[in-house]
Image 1: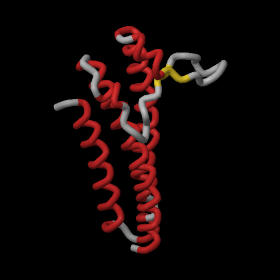
Image 2: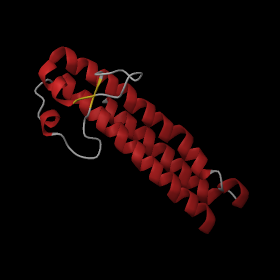
Image 3: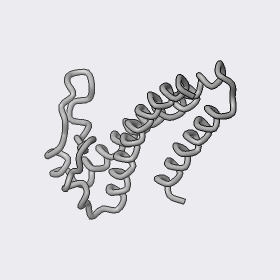
Length: 135
């Protein structure tokens, strides 16, 4: 089982538990469904994204320095100048989509998956909050 599918199983299992939580428990307890979903998902995926992005940037710097220099981002004095690349969080990056190195491509896919699941979990937290009011 790949790391990508393990992350998806983790996300969807917590989502299913939270939805079941909404329908099984009475009103005061069901109000905790967004917390049950939000705490183990959103921060985990944000920190996982940052960690995977640092790993991807480091590997890209070592294996393909020209591509690294093309997408490196300057975060300022105290945040590691020239250490992180812009992978195109909300869009696709053709250079990274067409990487020939399998290891780099897998790291790129894990970065994209982590940030997408973080955005998705943020939205689902809000939806679960609305659901606790109306269910």
